[in-house]
Amino acid sequence: MATMLQLVQRAMGELGLSVPNVVAGNATVDVSQMLALLNALGEELQRMHEWQKLTKEYRFTTQFLATTGNTTTNSPVVTAMGSTTGLDNTYMVTGLGVQQDAYVLTNDSATQVTLTRPVTSTATGVDLVFTKTKYAFPDDFDRLINRTQWDKTNHWEMIGPESAQQWQWLKSGYIQTTPRVRYRQLGNFFQIWPPVGVANYYGFEYISNGWVLDASGNAKSRFTADDDTCIFPDRLMVLGLKLKYFEIKNFDTTALYRDFVYQFDITRGTDSAAPTLNLAPMRENLLLGYDSIPDSGYGR
Image (tube, rainbow, N blue to C red; front, side, top):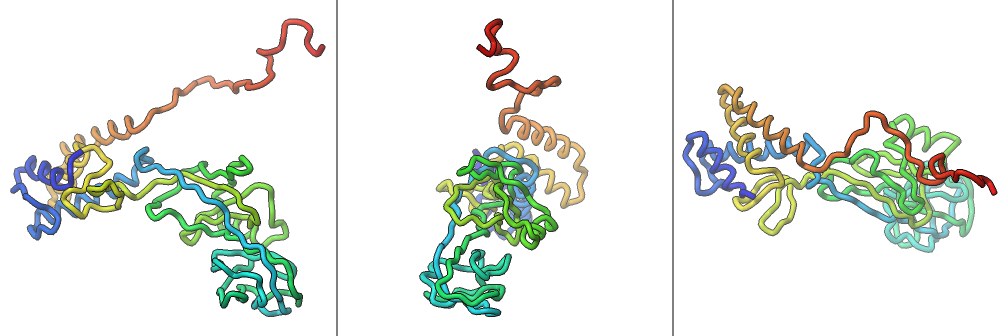
């Protein structure tokens, strides 16, 4: 696996350009341009396919807080709470007199929060459940992989991603809850519905933006040091870098484009194993079926 310096050296050597001894921090126009083009190439490749080396699993347990508090009609302030630890604007609240789709606006103190909507009744010591419905993505998150979102506690695939219209219907209509958990990617959060007042285990797969590795093996999203490496094959990166250099200089790119596409197709095709496709698929009978019925004595 070639380093960033070696990739640039190979590309510039093949182009007949002066080969640098260092790239990071090099003020020479061609060298600094090569670094910029190399990063552009890597960022584009990262988005072009669900690379198995960039595919990761993310797991989290739903968070909630069951507590009590005092409410006042037409006021969004809840006082005399048993606890407000950890509450922020990612938590939705349910309870007597709490209006639909009400979130924590501010965590005022150890015993008080302000909601986004006023409550409709006055009560003392009312039971309240604050449920986190907005979960931050991993630091290296780039995009979700479809149909990998699962409620692992209940062994159900999550329903989604919901459209904007469906999401608002769920949060604002008369029918609010369903046995299945729904999700939407909104506001840079993985949002779930309905609010779950228990500790359930959820998960999904995603594509990481960490296509570059530093000398210690830590992932990052750009080349910044000469000893950085990347997840893509060396030859693909060299050909792609030469192609981008020719494009930026307005040279003829016909041969370089052909070579790059050829290497890209090979890389994508061999990135992971592929299933065997059946042109006449039949549903398998995992349990009792016609092929497991005895010749005689059926039903006795």
